[in-house]
Length: 194
Image 1 (cartoon, rainbow, N blue to C red):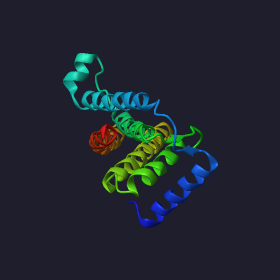
Image 2: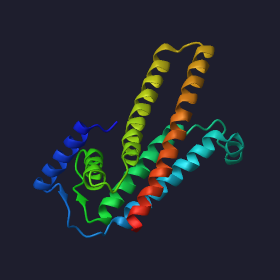
Image 3: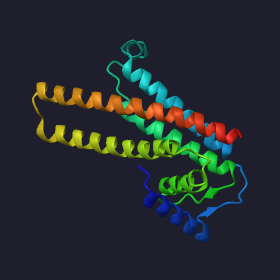
Image 4: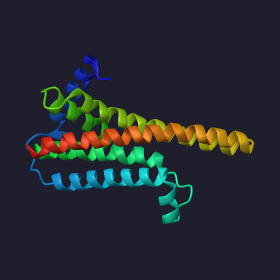
């Protein structure tokens, strides 16, 4: 996923961001706790949504029969990783001006300050990249599915088949995202505590 060309591009962008003052490297560490709290809340939300989405007894107990929050498991998992990355950068005094493309700049900064110098394994960086892509893809897939259902008003049998197929795919992606977010969380927390 991360080839040499992409790594060089990230490195080049970060050097430019530093020149432009978009990224600074000697800031204070005032927001570490803020980002860690948001990361923890996001991963807890992802876990709760996943459990509620796959456990009919919990759904019944909570009064949410047929609840499906799997799409939001993917999003909350990604956001836990994003906030952890921000906490990690912040813990090193690295600040990113919160302007457009904050997610891309955060990823580039993670690559530049932690991967290229060997402090973070490639698979951890790839978890973040894949989580962001999965969240984007599933949002698009859900939107497309909703538009198709509204437009065609397919027969019940076909709608059910389409829905069930999508549900299996989304459940698999949600579980993968949650697992990646958990691994990412464990690894980043270790580095922050160094």
